[in-house]
Figure 1 (cartoon, rainbow, N blue to C red):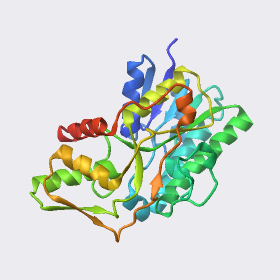
Figure 2 (cartoon, helix red, strand yellow):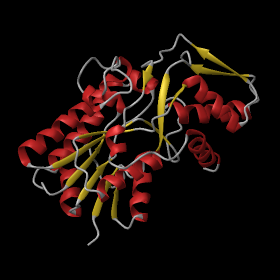
Figure 3 (tube, one colour):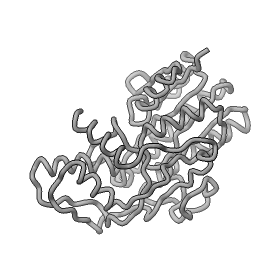
Figure 4 (spheres, one colour):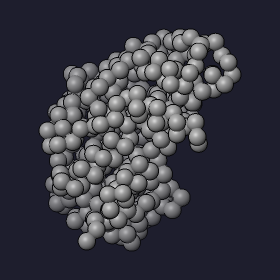
Length: 304
């Protein structure tokens, strides 16, 4: 019998990718997005789970954004993500046979965590302030998932992916993450023949990026191998400065102007590299190098 997988947030970056990937792997995939189910409503969420009766839920539904969006819409990020995660997890209480794969974020880890960051750094210090509301919502989801496991016997796997990118991302210049934001703005700069491209921050922070198809492959690996660990980091193991990232994107797009950096804007965490040895030692590793992933993402953006 095919395993039935309900993918929440199926129109987003992760949800779209994992839906297609699992379908290719011959899973029965049920896609759910904001057009068909209001996850802010407990009743709607409960009915969705009851009516679809999945074996596995991949919760990729979330309100996400970059530093600017997180820092200027703190209330919305906290409330939206709290409501989604609480409704999904509470709706699963009567169905302890449903395995829940919950998509967290590396932003849950403390600002001053030692790099590479292991799963043991969880709740060991203060959060990075610009996205702490989003992080708090994700932390609450992890704690509720643990409570379901301990009290009701559910299997809840919390994945902590590093910075994700890829086709079908949000390329809104004001609210996107760093890679889609740089791509959309740099295309605009090229098309307008600008001589300079200004980047938020100093360009010095080091970041790790993961191509979204690699995350989808990791989720399939976890399902196929019946892995039921509580907290799992998922990263590429490669870090790059924001300046180096911008130069790579500039090279692919062919923008011929200069790059400058606005150090008056916040950098966020100076360095964030996950230790993904736990999942690596179980047999999974990311396969897509940054340049290949960037080229694929930029090609998708150019054609859509």
